[in-house]
Figure 1 (cartoon, rainbow, N blue to C red):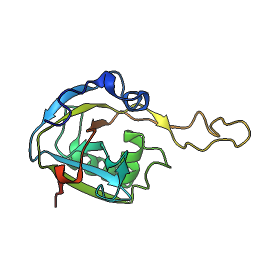
Figure 2 (figure 1 turned 120 degrees about the vertical axis):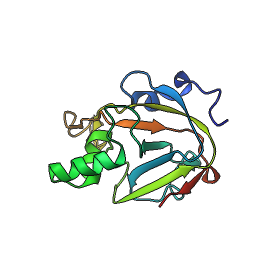
Figure 3 (figure 1 turned 180 degrees about the horizontal axis):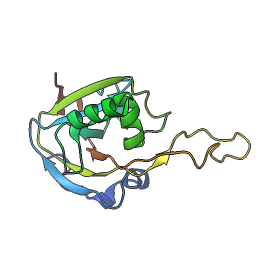
Length: 162
């Protein structure tokens, strides 16, 4: 099974650092539905030669996770776009993703994934060309949303879900 022998501590510092605390390793079954706001199809988006590993769950992962339906309703109540809400809560830095569309997929194989809450991230990775320091080091997206990290996904492991 995909990622069976992988532990949270095997992930890179950046991958572990995207979570608040230690993410829980969970088995996700065939048919499990995932989504993300993205500017690219996950089939065209490459992450170290594989499909992007960063997702949100369509169904809530925890009582504090609104899932996709709850996220869409919350955005409407806040009078903002769902992508803007997702960017702030999932802490997606501006340079990482344009978040212009919603992509839904379902798993075609069972996988082990890391599930937890997003740590805050800088709003932008833009750096001062002379100092190398972040231009706005105190401007962050708050994070806190639930996220699913599935390393080693391939294009044959997922299907577009309509």
